[in-house]
Length: 144
Image 1 (tube, rainbow, N blue to C red):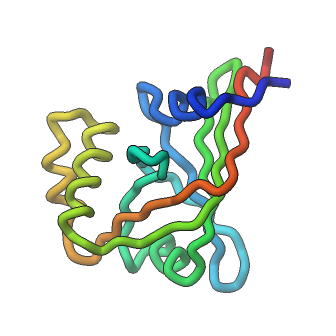
Image 2 (image 1 turned 90 degrees about the horizontal axis):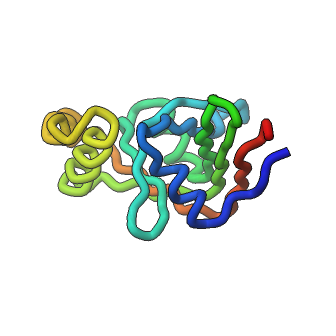
């Protein structure tokens, strides 16, 4: 069994390089689960930020029910993970969407691509999502 991570270790894990994708879990209208991979970034307050289309399944489920679970794992030995549960705020202000789309795109694709992702994802119909952590579970070095 591994050890629980400290708050600083959780932050370092979530912001690791190279970045891992997050897996966002939401609940469909019929109560069944939906999980989707996402690119994300942490803001200064420790909230998870990501973008999605307002008309995507993620966008629709989060509008109907703002509760979500989010998981990031390192699938390489000795294996570690962080799971966050919380509620989201949906933000359609295009200036904020563009700003965070550039930061997130630059994190995953390189700083030279940040502006392209800002322009691509900072358009009407896109949302910025802020997931506020309410409960965090973590484990590091599970195979040791």
